[in-house]
Structure formats: C-alpha cells, structure tokens
Length: 219
Image (cartoon, rainbow, N blue to C red; front, top):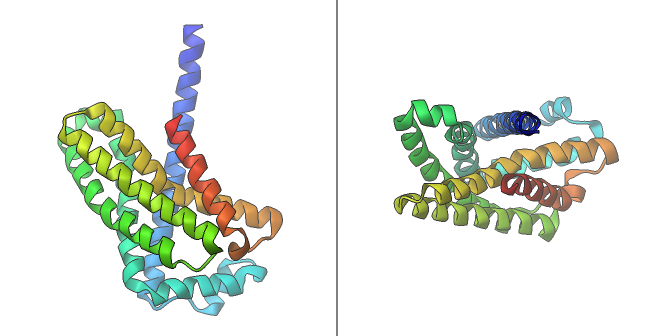
C-alpha cells in the first residue's frame, strides 16, 4: 500500500512538473513574441494571416495593434513577465534549493523585483483592456490584485523567517502568473472546438484559465 501510494505521488509530481514546464515555455515564448512584435511596430496583416485561422485574422490583427498602441505598458508587463516565468520554476526545485542555495536566494530576490511591475501592469491592463468586455476585464484586474497580494505576503513571510508560509504564497503568486499561459491554451481549445473568437470568449477563457491553475496550486 505504501509503495503504491509513493508511486502515485511520484507520477503526480512528474505530471505537475511537466505541466508547469510546458506552460512556462508557452508563457516565455508568448512574452518574447509580443515584445518583438511591439518593438518592430507590430505584425502586418499578412503575417497575422499566416499565423491564425482565416476567421480570426481580423480580430488577431486588431489585438496586436492594441498592444502596439500601448508599448510602455506592454513592455512593463511582458519583459519582466518572461523573466518571472523562466526563473520561477527553479525556485520550487528541491535539487536547486539544496545544491545552489545562493542562487535560490538571489533568484528569489529577482523574482520579487520583476513581479512588482508585472502585477501593477496587470491591474492597469484590467482597467484599460477593451477585449472581452467587463467580465474579461474583471478577471484580469482580480488576477493582478491577487498576484500583488501574494507577493506582499510572500515577502513578509520570508522577512519573518517563516519559510513554510513564504513557500505557500510564492506558489500562489507563481500559479497566478503561470495562468496567463493556461489562458492561452484554453483559448486555443475553445477556438478549435467552437470557432468562437477572442472577443466573444475572452471572459470565460480568462476565468477558466486563472481559476483552474490556482485550484491546482492550492491542491
């Protein structure tokens, strides 16, 4: 019975790590792509047409142009966001913590520093973001607020030397940040199965992506 339980836990742990790795990679690639797009003045209509299904090209082009129109806010969100998603998984590796304690501490400080502009820009995006209506905007704003709240609690816990609470709040913060990749995956599934555009499905997609990722983190 004990061996079976340990085997199940090992499978679950590996599955979670694979999921985290894939989602983090999706988030980093998306952040780099968005930054390159904005830095170059945005994708052309023809470039978007090569990347998206025909029925979504117009909406995807508009979506890209919105970020190009807000370059400072976009860079404030995606550049530190990419760094956050690249570094954060290493913080939860027991091997890295045990062998490279100094790296763990310094990367943790970097994470907290880059998380601040990510959370603040998330709040602003929630207030300004025109796609998906108030349901999507509420999801973005709430995620940004929860992300910053978790950041403050994680920082306060480690300052008190409460490592257990620090780890709990770092997991929550990471889950909220990682969920933007889950949102993309859910959006692709919804589009592929229903044909719905982003404007139409954004509210449900944002809420499903963030709540599901946060629920797994709590589990």
